[in-house]
Image 1 (cartoon, rainbow, N blue to C red):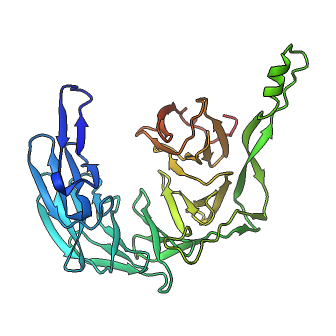
Image 2 (image 1 turned 90 degrees about the vertical axis):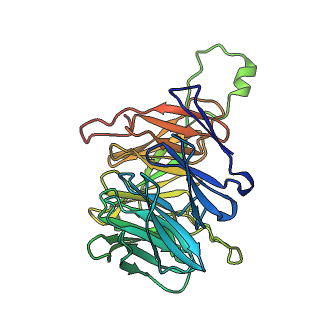
Image 3 (image 1 turned 90 degrees about the horizontal axis):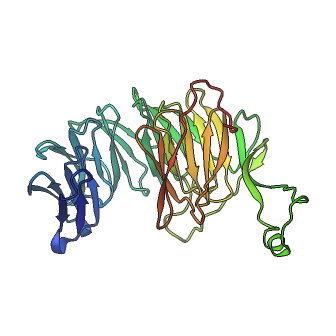
Length: 385
């Protein structure tokens, strides 16, 4: 069952019950006036109107939580379905929720779909068992087919740049490949090696614990206080290191499915100049690449595996968390560690609001909102700020 409330009209409530079909996943439509639910076993996808009791069904959605993408203007939706052992893309109008068209796609087992930022193309990629990235026009024409290699596990993550000119493809072979939107050919390939050697212009930041040296000689404190507080006085900070550097590497077991390797996390900065990546076999390292210069800009080496990272929606500032009580920030001018004042609050996930003034920080069973200072206009932004 799904429940919805209005923040401006407390008396308004909504309850959606799919009955025996169950609800495996739910998402908002771009206009916030409809809720899309996927039933258990992907029997159907239902569009529920919050303005009246009307609902529209799409039979046989491909996935529960994936396989649905909206255009940036919110006017159309692309929904992946499967019937007769073949994958299809259904295009729906988000005004009347009518099917505008449908076309089959050349995939063995479609993994996901995403509209380009300018709504001119749709990218579709296959399951990890088949390396295949397909670019389609909205009318169903296949614009390009990309396959980096044939043997081995294939695509793990795909991301459009906000400008729409670049398409990043992260693979299980621990490489990031970037395609251009004119010819759909790769113009950059970035490797994630466990040992970084020179020549290298990247800034390397390593999280360390620095002991705090407190002068308590002039304080009159009880013996119990001194005994209970003699340990644990540390400040978390970044230490700038030099190449060569060896990154913590975990070799995945060969006899288990879904190996923890390859580019499992990546995202573009607002200006499409930088993209961060995390190679899952080196989960404590975050790589930041400069697309303008086609080189590595920085590596952040954390003590714990990186749980989440997000770019500021208004400027080039990256925030990440590792499940610890600290928040970590990077800009092209430097990096810093921010201490969280809340006791027993470990940051496991985070999200920006739309204007970049506030961060939502999530723990296992609680959350908080953190006010974030705006970046100064000048480029002089250091970790001391």
